[in-house]
Length: 132
Image (tube, rainbow, N blue to C red):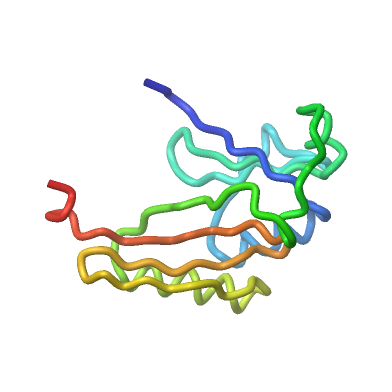
């Protein structure tokens, strides 16, 4: 139905965001990044546009939420294994993120963290046989 997704998130400091997500092992699409925005690559045709707050504000007429106080969304990303979930979340916490909740339902396992701007990231693994 859709060929590409860009999730737009406001951030306070582009350099801090770049360092945090670099520490987690992510890369960036430099063609669309500058001092006001940074394109985080999540996978093929899956991106997060990390934008300075005033640039983000220009996208809409409403007041922008402060993600450290109010959750505007939770970004859920699949991992290939339980170990990959743990490794990524552990790197996030070591890089300055805040540890969130954990869930273990046997067939599905997840942990979360908040990035330095307070955005919530849920990393999960689901047993492929549970998907039917």
